[in-house]
Length: 94
Image (cartoon, rainbow, N blue to C red; front, side):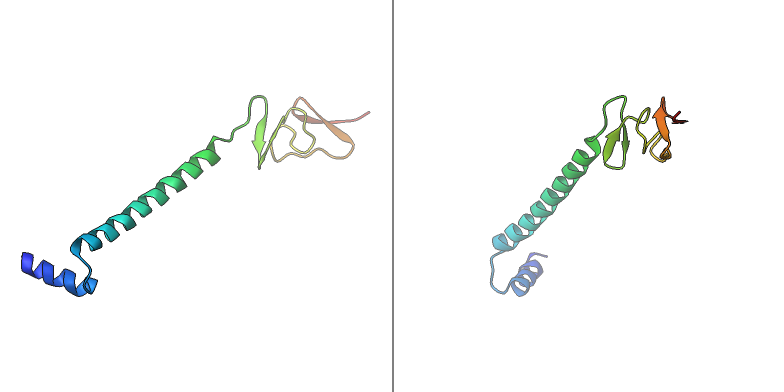
């Protein structure tokens, strides 16, 4: 009932008005929502970073796996010192 609510708010707020308490609660809720929206936007920006064809994202870099010696054919394949990456496969140099 209304009297119990009034009594409870007086005890919890130590003399602050109900409007002040409600403003504080709404302010906290608004800050929480703003933080969540900001984090979601940051995640969306991170996910948008893609590579333009023919490059592939390997770690943080965009590389052409058809000719990149450290990422030949895919991100995990590294050609040996005496090899070159040709059309995505490691080929022995002559």
